[in-house]
Length: 114
Length: 109
Image 1 (spheres, chains in turn yellow, green):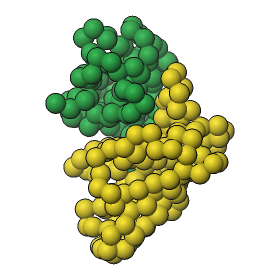
Image 2 (cartoon, rainbow over the protein chains, first blue to last red; image 1 turned 90 degrees about the horizontal axis):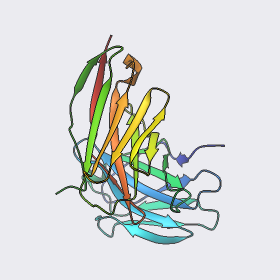
Image 3 (tube, chains in turn yellow, blue; image 1 turned 90 degrees about the vertical axis):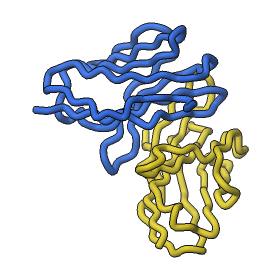
Image 4 (cartoon, each protein chain N blue to C red; image 1 turned 180 degrees about the horizontal axis):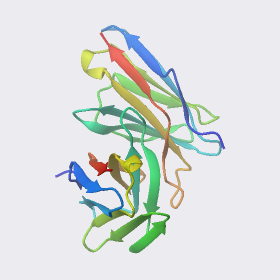
């Protein structure tokens, strides 16, 4: 089975721009979660989508948004980028059900905001 | 209080020894428990999950869960230099993952 894929792998943007990141889950997985990882803050949960609906949300500002498509692929958007948004953005997929909730991570997108 | 607490380390063990990594969680209703390994510059890799009290073994890895004490541990037997990484503990509560900040393990040859 193919693993979780994320595109692009690396991205450089300037302050004020917006960015869209993409995640394709493992085949059969209906849940996609997004995380931000920085050296100082560790893994911070952004949101989770299950069957095209946002099921959980972390404590990030509204500039961070996401969506999920009918094929379970997910996108994350960050608008009005700030320097502090520089981070590794990880998505993880799972079946999303009790007993099938172990998450598998993609390779991540490293975003640098200048 | 954080949902999941881990000692940040570094934990240094000699090659061939047993490495013991510990994690506590705050919510008694947490349902599932996971250990991830993360090499520097890479994404986390799932190595163990455990749902019930007791021990679960997989090769050189053993996960231990004690729900009464709200404690999860990971034992790595015959530690190898390639096990040097940061180990993240995670718990699920109502479909939401909570990660600890990770314990850095150094296995010295």
